Length: 446
Image 1: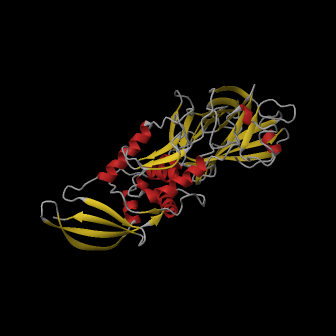
Image 2: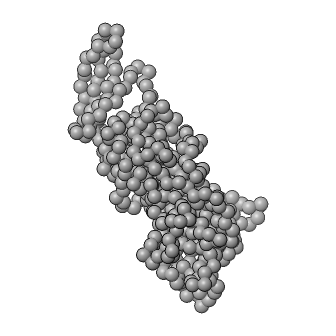
Image 3: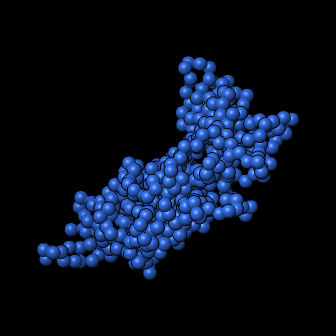
């Protein structure tokens, strides 16, 4: 949640305040604001998970759309801009200025042959799908190589070249990849940062992209990759919300005490304090159950490694960064992930409300109706300018189905291709030696 005072927050659900968008294009030294932006035409979409069940990884590009007049002479295609929303009082005094993201224009089109344009832009995640094959190969330099003669099952002697590669850590790999992609990032210390990564793939062409790699990394971190409002990559984790799945477990005191979750917001009418009001709230009759365990599989038919219990597990399958690791190596990794996500419960719902631009994806919110509906902002659409409207959405099954979405299946399929890829004239066999921080590759040469 964007840090504001309570007084600043109230400006968005109280009368007597006005909103002004500013889109600043530094390369053009151009600022587009309310003077030329069409009334209520701004729409910003953000998401860390849109799947039917909570799925780690994120890395979903945010978008910003608006319609604007009087810029026909400016070519905005491919230009970057920073979006900010300023709120002023009736005297024109600034009350709050909120960063709304850094975007690059994807398309600019005339609207119905009229004298204004519709601008569609995305943040840096949109371009993370570039091939990273060369970067990956350069990340693991060959430390040494030597020829070894072996006898195959037919008694024929063959010569293989043993190549010893260097290794890296997950944190170093994450930062190196973001630098390669030209994406600024926040300095973070995350779980499994010190996990050793060995060369386990043979990427070529576009079968290994930056987006795939970032999703795998964020899954191992137990979080969701995203570009924050200042245009920097960060991994967001869902904080324990203080939610209670059974009626007899609700506390007698306020759900969010003064020292409670700082990234939470309560919606609804209150006689005790001013609050933002919701417009509609459609929610399931159940809350998602606690995740009780982690099952890590490198193949679909692999038993893998399980920590916790199998009552309602989160299954990690096809993560190429975990290929080649033993059950003993996978166990502490899985335990770290479980510790991050085991307290996540929420009620799936879609809520429409007065726009609160200081709320971010990953924040907690509660709606007070006949009972209390509590959830996370997994996806959100913020539209309008003076009449700001927000829509929050969080999907989820009561018990995890662990079905794979089409996009996740594509990534897993590519991961398998990378793992089992064979050269026409040689077969590669991967081996690793973590004590020496090297990985070895045997390549048949005859």
